[in-house]
Amino acid sequence: MDAQQETRESKQEPEATSLRDKGKEEGREDARSKPSARAGVPEANIQVEEVEDFGAALASYESGLKALKEGEVVEGKVLKVLEKEVIVDIGYKSEGVIDLEEFRGTEVNVGDRVDVLLEKTEDGHGYVVLSKEKAERLKVWDAVEKAYDSGEPVVGRVVDRIKGGLKVDIGLPAFLPGSLVDSRPVRHLESLIGQEFRMKVIKVNKRRGNIVLSRKAILDVENAEKKKQTLADLEEGKILRGVVKNLTEYGAFIDLGGIDGLLHITDISWGRISHPSEKFQIGDELDVVVLKFDLEKERVSLGFKQLQDDPWDYAPSKYPPQARIRGKVVSLTDYGAFVEVEEGIEGLIHVSEMSWTKRIKHPSKILNAGDWVECVVLDIDRDARRLSLGLKQTEPNPWDVIASKYRVGDRIKGQVRNITDFGAFVEVEEGIDGLVHISDLSWTKRVAHPSELLDKGDEVEAVILKIDSENQRLSLSIKQLQPNAVEGFFQTHGVGDVLHGTITRLTEFGAFVELFEGLEGLVHVSELSTDRIEKPEDHFKVGQQVRVKIIKMDAVEHKVGLSIKAALDEPDLEAVQAYFDSQPSGNGGATLGDVMSPEVLSAGTAKPAETDAESESGPDGEGEAKTDSEAEQDVQKES
Picture 1 (cartoon, helix red, strand yellow):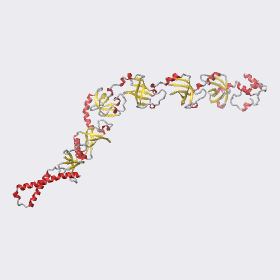
Picture 2: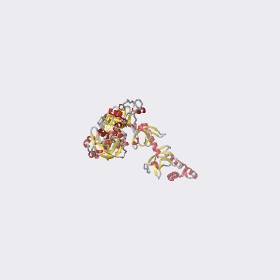
Picture 3: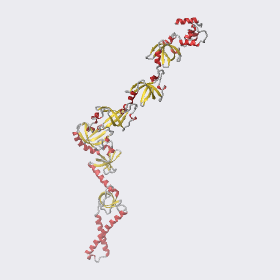
Picture 4: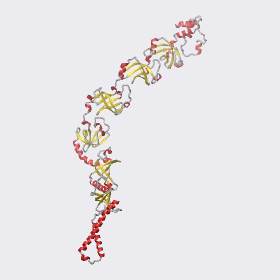
């Protein structure tokens, strides 16, 4: 305040001096003009007259000053610009001081005229308290109130996005509700920041400092007239000039002049875009064609890509089948990958066309969105706008090599790559697997699961059964490495042969007898005994050795019908030979009765369960054993 005080004193002292000099000069002139009157007048009276003359002059000066009131906006003149302050004369008895910060953004020079608010006629230092900012604010408030009363629009700039709408600068902070920004809902209010609009003041509260604006009210009035003209000129197929008014996820709204049309995202470009902002920005001017117009609902559908050439018109000649092309992966699905070969033309690489040898579960295993790939055109349909592409066709088909390298019957060696319920996959070549079905693992063993014989990683040898390059299938067999024991059995045995076997299963209808590993025969319940048997399990046991006779054979179905009952009537030659072998040498030889005795003939033949008494005694229970001659006669009768 030293500079202010100095300025104030330097201005006031000359004024005070001039006022005093003026009074003295006037007194001297009166004395010269009336010398006779002042002659002889006492000195004290002369001094009183001079004081009265000075008071009258001061009163005359003060009456010439402006009649100012606190709170009033007045015009002032810049007297001096200091480092941090500006001295302003408003025609009052003392000057005012304004902080230089209130002039920020504007250049201030000595002599400039500025409007200021008189806050106080005098502060503690004798200065007038002024404010330029408050004066401007009051002027804006006056203009806002006038615009509110008259309905005239005001111009403001959007400065921020706030809750419920936008903050607008019209010289004072004002609020523009989101619902009153436009005639249609605006989804992205942030996009309007920095833009200037004409708006109507719809609410003013000076005491609370609230100003509410509406741009919709101005647009409704402006669009009403434009709308009439536009609707009169609209027709399908007509090309119009419009302005992008708003952007959404599904398209762009174009202002055609009083009415908005929707440019759907699918009608913006022949190619794929994810958002209209990739092509347009709010405020852009563009030509559009009217695709559909509903006068009753006042809905207009627009097109932009329709004004450009359709790339599918020349696609068949540009991308013929078997042509190699390069494109960009734009999206992935469960069933394949879409590749953009040019804007507006996309082709599908089906998941089955990605690899010759690998089973691709999802395209993401080998491709990513954004990858550039080389592929082969498989098929093109202009009318359906479909382009089929292949990725694996860019490489030789290894299945063609398999067909030329191997023949059916060849033996191969490979590693078990995978085991399933129905078989095992063996790698024949890199990326080429052959299937050994569970039925081709063994001739004789009943295999419930391939893991019973094989493990993943095992090195095995197999025989090629079938090569199907078209369907990419290779059938292998491990059991073909060994002779077929079952077929050998049917070649060496026939109906009437008597064999030994082991009961493996008992059922209501009979018993299954294993003749050797891999071949079972069925003994029907009627062939189990000469006696009627209701329940086979009451007379036989699983694991029991029995002597059976072949009564039926089916070499095609590998089925054998057996009979225990019929075997009872056949001599057991194996038992006879065993009897001879068991006799000591030099005993004079065995008699015919010895050889043909029932004990020898029935050796190894299972009979239905019977009581110990029946087995040791005759029909009368006397237990008499037959003589050799009786036994011999019995054998002769049987033969």
